Length: 496
Picture (spheres, one colour):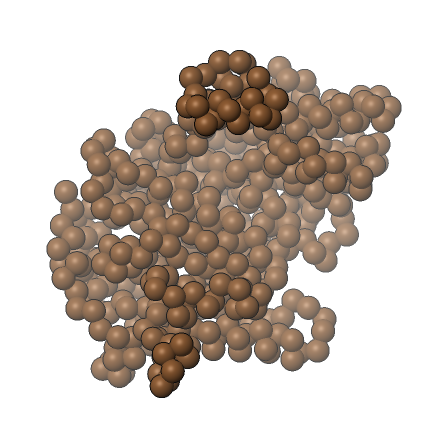
């Protein structure tokens, strides 16, 4: 078992006192990487804390695990698979990098064919997937595609029919291309939605709806068996996990919407963060320092949640993306040795968009009884065309909230007092473009990995998502041994 005693014994000083005692604090706890400024100075990290985490990283062989990941070793031990999403952006085992490049070339050829109208006129891209097969592409399209008029792209994940109904009202079936994203090509919700789209096309008189289908999958044989022409199946490797897959063919709708040059910029930005993570010492390594702060609050201060807030409308989907990345990866209770971890693992990730959240949840952040580390994300260069005062106020609010959380304010009336000493970090992007977004997402991936290694867990399986789906399938087939409450709910809904 790793020795956490040095970390757990760290003194707990107030943030203002830490600044007052250390003139070099800001310089030591800020970094600039790939167009992103990282600031952890308003967290309780200290030089001693970083040194203690570096010692823990050595004990848990973070460096060895990191190299094993980039080398294509089977570090996903429970599924006996490599972890190779970095190969999709050119950083990893040579054979895997080459295989990813071949798939990217094939993906680009299909996009070229769409642009040349080899599929007939295409105006709409309807992408169906769920989890990592939807959250990543949706984030990319929403963040970077607002000014693009290349194609209308809709990403549908929910099996609730209203999600598809909304798209059917807006899209013309004769000019719609269906994109099915499923690693296994068996995902129940995705395949049900795909079948409904085919039915919609057929009902509208589309002669060959299966000729207007692109499949994104690690199981090409199943896609062909379903009815997709093999020339329209875009694959990716088994070592690319769903929540890490937007760099692969799963990113197809973003590449179509943004254009191939922008997709390559996304990959280049991620690769720059890969190299930083792989080559930088831990005390000046952005993913490592962020993970050290995460673990300090979960293990020492017993914080159960953390909250990222995007002070940029274009990043409004990032908190949802991070929920899956962090909680599906590290929401585990068993270590690599199969034994209970015996300490908290992933905090609950939640968040929102500034300045909306200031008028909703920030009351609890400032005056509530929970300690919640906050992460502010902001962009220096405005993305809008309105008077600059809009963006100026947006940034001032982001920075002032962090200052207020730390400083607090004492008043004679306890209801008007702010305790302060509440931690926050800030990620400030020079601009939001494909390159910086790629670097940002890769930063979060590696941060999640470091958290997992230091906790001694496998960040790359997700067995916890299966049980509820198995029970739903059993119920749908008229079986299953359910408790009285669930049996009654099924009956009341007429699902017997």
